[in-house]
Length: 212
Ligand SMILES: C[S@@+](CC[C@H](N)C(=O)[O-])C[C@H]1O[C@@H](n2cnc3c(N)ncnc32)[C@H](O)[C@@H]1O
Image 1 (cartoon, rainbow, N blue to C red):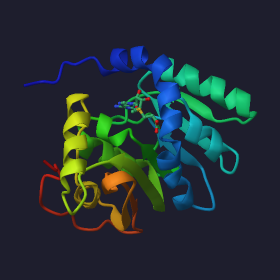
Image 2 (image 1 turned 135 degrees about the vertical axis):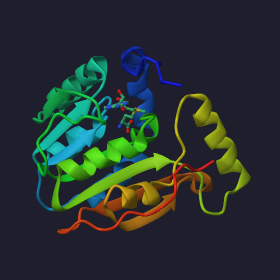
Image 3 (image 1 turned 90 degrees about the horizontal axis):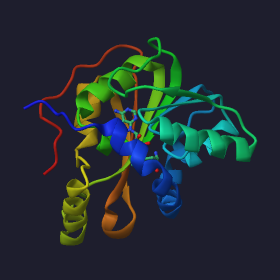
């Protein structure tokens, strides 16, 4: 059945109340920073209110692409307050409005689980990464030990429309080589997954990458 949910409208409505919430999980979001390469440009997909984008833009040329205009307005305000510049573009992770091999890094924090077609989004990530470039995903998920608290939290996030996934499998299928996967946070319900685009394409893996 086609997915007819209007995500753009949903995030436009969420934008104003989301910014204070995103502050709460900033320590988790900030995990992405230690995986940034020394050189940009870096693309953030789904920067939302722009906390991470403003921090990254202090060190590297940065671009933010978000489905939601209202989220982009929040990010613009945050960049202005921080006194830093980053390009902001309205667009869809599944059809990124950038040429191939444009970025040294692509970062998504709590945005990958918000995108229904994760495989397509990761293929786009792989396309816009320069050879050797990095994909950094920070998101919620079910940890390897499948502890009941983390599984319970995952069920709650799913009710809010989040997709729990096995990101390394999806990365490999998109042609990215997985460099690191670390679980962290309460009940290890958060993870950072880092992949890089090899100089030459690598064979994909089997499996759906869905984690239920
Ligand atoms: C849960 S928020 C995460 C915001 C921020 N990255 C953070 O760490 O708090 C998800 C963000 O992804 C954006 N988003 C959702 N689907 C998207 C898509 N298909 N393409 C681009 N952005 C998308 C939303 O508008 C929203 O800003």
